[in-house]
Length: 410
Image (cartoon, rainbow, N blue to C red; front, side):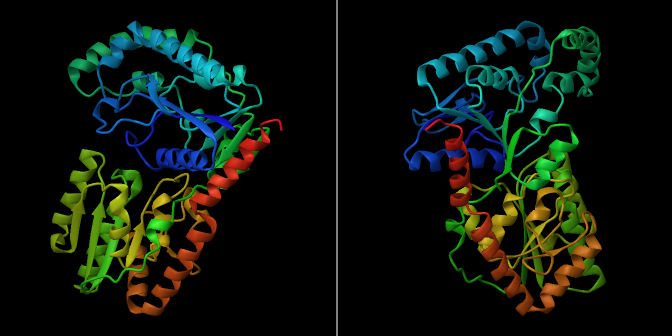
């Protein structure tokens, strides 16, 4: 097949696991002999240290720049021009490449007229892989104008421009997406879209996945004591403060001294400061370490040095990539069954669970696994079986490949 991938971000200029799936799936399909082009935004292009392969094209404009006051002026001066340039680039690429099928990945902060155009040019040959909520989110500029300004000066100017901008947006016809063929990363995502009134004519759940091979080596942890790991983007929805509170509870209420929590990730500066302040106020600085976000190649060693992985998310995440990575690494998992994570974490089968935000309940589950190395080992074995059997990248790539082939006439 000739396959065109459309995505807002693409590694290494990306923002999370959803874009890693895009790259891993694209490379997997190329490895199976398909001719493939990835068309993505120019986000982060100037900071890339190595050139892209010729099948990755970073030429689309984001609808608006991230965290820039220039957006207020570009809305009036460049918005429509940038959108038209995007549409021209997509049209020209389709005419030149003549894809058999298009797979639309993340479209957040890209003009939604792009997938509308693709649906018009290649009817019944467009599929979507939904691992986030971009089609049911407000327009990005609508969000921008309704969001509070960061300072009094910019707030005064923004309040004036906002009156005109919202009137312009109100007069514009919203893009009419058909969403005929949609693949969902979890059944939870499929149900969430249904609640919002989006029930595609042809949809299927193809679970998100991880390349489990790098995580499968058996590693003997050095040192003593119980090593706890929390890994991911640091913002309030991830609930990392719950892990800190649980450690504080164990140290204060149970007098435990032989445990250590490592928190790996970057995120919102304000929340990161709150986490460090929480550690200080609980007087547990000797029990908690912070590490910056690590490259993908460094993650297997991090997981394998841990005894327990803590998944503390509060919001209903579409999937839970870090859960699968930890399971594949042979680490026992304690987590919240929120969103798509509920389809991965099975209480007392491959993990222990606790209510989101409940630090005392998390502490009790940690104590339970500290007291029973046998239970810890059983959950670790079962978790690895879950990761390899149900959430491995080869399975995901095969299912996506089969679905795309069904859209191409023989």
